[in-house]
Image (cartoon, rainbow, N blue to C red; front, side):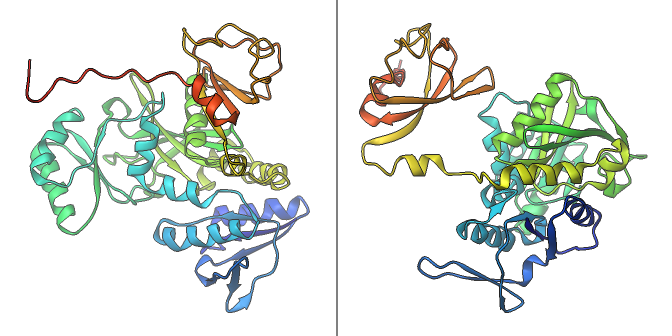
Length: 390
């Protein structure tokens, strides 16, 4: 394959390792400075130029988009997508993971541990927000910081209030986050590739530093993950749509807490700590996926008027519960079950003998009118009239 690595730092460890791994597996690979691309938009003819010359055809790209160029970098990746080139990380997933607030909002709707977090702009809401996340000490984070930059530990409410108000006065957006005291100075970095944790290490801060990032001198050691921690890392990457991700977990008393999901994780610390060829695993995954690029199934399957794709949760009183797919008569009603999600496990293309259980979620394609009949009726909350309070 012809592989393009988008990176502003061709000599960076991770970029060099990806290039070496790709060459070792027989691929043609080059590194391109993301900011040297020009985007041209025409009807049915999206084009990219590199250093003012037309960019040749590549089979796949590996985006290494730094935080300082997120907007332009994701635009370049998005244009590759429009040109039909396989991208290891999608532009949308990169953008979502880079925005700490947006990522936290998305993760919050799933059964996954995250530190309590608040986002406010009104100065009168700062102290209540600090109290809401558990009180001082708290972590103050810039929304687009990286490698530990823009992460501050405030020991008192007054200090936290002053920091937030100062940063907001300079037009900075900040998060107020619960300080997981039992995990002070250490965290676990997991490298997720293709729905698997290929390597994991514990990072420990040195001295009085509470940030454990390798770039801040943190010490690293290989770690064997428990099933709970491994499942949390994989789920976090999947929720944000990343096939390759660095997932940072805090070791809380209540279990793993997702601190951050990085779309362009560094390999240096984790490869040296674990002796695992992470770059090779990434290229192997790229080989497997490049021939089967992702398709926006919702967009493709709704092209025919009157048809849609819908997730149907199965409740105890569902007409489908405890029936096999064959006996559910869904096929006769022009409904195709694409997959079943059961306790976090996805069962693709389920057999007709598969029993439908309470708590399952069926991913179905079919007529909208029929699908609507199967969706559980939302319970209407009883609202008291403002004119007649209790």
